[in-house]
Length: 229
Image (cartoon, rainbow, N blue to C red; front, side, top):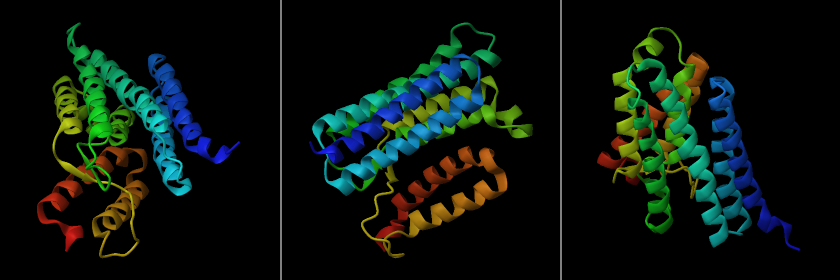
């Protein structure tokens, strides 16, 4: 029995389990463990693809399993996090349900990714783990920025904007290194260095900033083609 071909699917299942745990903690109102499980799920999502490429054991079943797990961890979980935030600040009984646009955007994003053969080196639309990292970090913010972000109108704008970004035609760079030369990876290396600095200075509060930096870097790279020069 070739056990190595099951390693990527095992990692995908770990992603799914982490998403399920995150949902439970979210429903219990425990924002910190919910966010941590979402972030660990994102790590498993990265390493399942990495393992499949490294071991050369990609399969159609693995691809479908990955999307199903992602829909839980990066579709339903961030939607519930946003729903609870909106429910906590809105006087409307129906407005918080707008949060589930995130789940719709994630489902469309994953479906498009599965049939679009042009997304091997970059993503078309914001990838669902990045969206989830941003959303799940918002309840953990503190101070003046938290007071500003955790208001009804700001949360609604974030919901609509990030749901659109996932299905937008905007190209976002992927962390699939064909080489480790500076010339081929200027944007990736610059982004990683800036992310480390942000984490060092702002800790958890840096997560939304890092995702905004990722979006901005991808837009700049798309406009001027930094890594193509």
